[in-house]
View 1 (tube, rainbow, N blue to C red):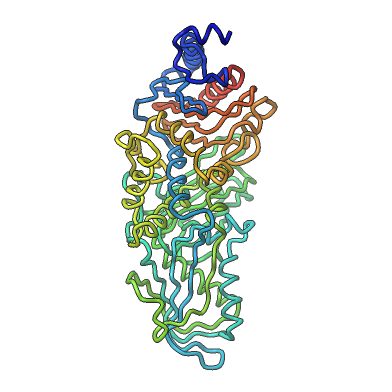
View 2: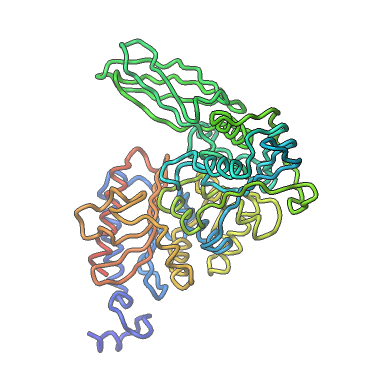
Length: 489
């Protein structure tokens, strides 16, 4: 076989692995089988793009792989790679409390500033579900200083980022829900309130509601929900009136059901300091003063004016990255994109500068950036476009980077965690794929690394656009394509 291959003019270079030297007719055969998998599905009317590379960078399979596609959350594979490069795996976010005044006995006489650094983890995602972990930390540090009361303003400073709440192109219909929150340097609980609706009551009654944090009056719920018989289909309806913190609830919920939903707020820095002040007061802290938001940049190192009272340091980026690549957390990626831009260019962080940073990084990775159009870092905008060839090339290029182990560990693992936790159970592909799966209206995308039956590593990207309501069918297509690649290579 080796002699035959060498006598023919295959573009393989040095032949070390069979999968790297598949004859052209064999690759065409595999491409044909993939085409047949797509055509035989009810999702065949979607537009499909597939790119598969080997460890030498050769494109083994290319189906519409140079066509621009809406990538959904697969865009995070590029964004998170650039963030990791810019911040480094051990970078931590530091949220600080400064005092402008003096302490007398247990009273701080003067203003208190809480200064945001873009930390996305001031909530329960990282701290074993303890959403008040950071507030606990701040309270303990103020208590250690002997401060039990403040006579002055509570000021939230969010000057580390610009004042644009959303990336360009987000759909206004999404802005009520947790996957599309406002982005701010001083943020708490993913800039959401967590609503629980209890429909235990009589048919026709209004369900009871409660919410985190503290049933806060920062938001106002208009509860027009109703309890319906369990044999009637439910209807979920939540809508925050844009520009306000008034949320309309009009869902029809099955009798005896309990529903949970995270819903966004507006003005995150005010939400942060309002929640923190309430938390302190609930713990016996006395605060005599109003709340103010300050977007000005200050010289926090000026010890004649500011005294650092407390600092909270987040877990490192290498851990935060898992929220992006395993769990498709849009809030984390947009926050960290702005923070990376602020660090990279030493200016206020913005989405636009973050995109510039990603594009510069992509060019350094050998990606044709004329084929990459970004409006955000998460892929939530319909303006985002990229081709599967660029994604598979990114995945290939990452293998040569020192940060590759950290990057790969941040990805979801088939049948084990993240977006792939419920995929590939009882198949040979269990734990053989590390990647990102994203699905939203009209778009399905799955990209990552596949270790084949012959222990070869492939980089793949499979994206479908113009998808109708065929999520199950799309998943079956992806599974069959990956099973074929696993067996053949």
